[in-house]
Amino acid sequence: MSSPSSPPTSSEGFEGVSPPSAARHEGPSVGAPSDGGSRPTWCRPLDALIERAIVQLSVIASCTPRNLALELAALENDFEAGRARRPRFHYEPRANDAWIEGLGRARDEVRALGPWGELYEARLRELWLEAHIGRTAGTDELGTWAAKRYAARDDFHAAADELCARWLAEPAPTPAPRSRRSDDEADPGSLVSRLRAEVGRRRLPFRVEVARGLSALAATGPKSIFVAPGRAMSDDAVARTVMHEVEGHALPRARAQSLGGLFVRGTAFGSDDQEGRAIHLEAQYGHLGPERRRELALRHHACALTREGIDFVTVARSLWNITGRWRDALRITARAQRGGGETGGLTRESVYLPAYLRVTACIETDPTADRWLGAGQVATCALPALRQLCPEPDEIETKP
Image (cartoon, rainbow, N blue to C red; front, top):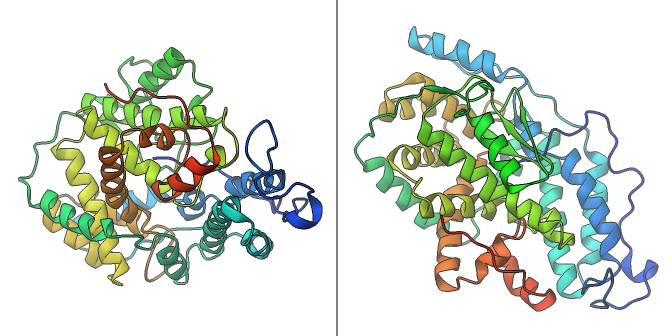
């Protein structure tokens, strides 16, 4: 999973970074080269604005409960004892009014500035929606903004519903032995050890850190790969997670540094399609097996039910009917509904399967597309504009 590092808790962020006012502040016309490349100079203040927004407005950080592990354990005890209830998660909504106003103003200013303006407008709108999500974390209002941020983009969302149903109809897999602890630094086969070894082997500019409060096994930020502590893992799960975080997230971030601009800071939907590309790579490397398929399908199913307004207890029971394990049912339900109040939730995992199908179709149609998708947080819908505006990135190796 890709995620920015945890943002600061202060209000620092928007102050001191002004919207571009491109036509007023910069001399060159749209499309005039700067920075030794093809970007107009008015992109520079936008890059600074977006970079600070990424840190300050982290959706995952905003929507991760402060008491996630403790409350999941309490929920499991209560559900096992027949005392089904709603979770009592604690969130810290953010005062994002200044960001909402500033991002909206910047978005409106770049709207008419040609192809680069369209790319930046879309990314600014996405961050504007994420600012609303952070402001409403832990309330019923969050679901409305999350539904806009993660809305269906194309026909791949309907195709993902069908894929989810097929994967859930497969025979239940036999769980692999979970003999590794994710954060066991004394075990060379643990997730934290394998990640550090791979990062070192590839000489990537990333730290590998253990971080409490992650709902995923691991997450990659701009400079760090975070590992959840105390998770029991199989060797297959360790290998898959290392490949996913390094090949799917860390390497594109590292490649993006030489390209700058929106390759580093992401196009609109870039983080979504990067998750899809990471799953595509899992399939290429032979890691998209029965357990992984079921996990992804369960997340998609939980998000679909949540979008229909189904409450936590009912969604958890639906997943228990499939898995027969309260621990998995509650963990996945909490992940789908994180950030929500009495109803709704973030439902970010609703984009994973559509993105997987979208990226796979894109690469199968044009294998050279992966040069762009693997060069940063780049969405498939941004490829036509980027190909018009930028030199083609170097070819990359994506086969095992």
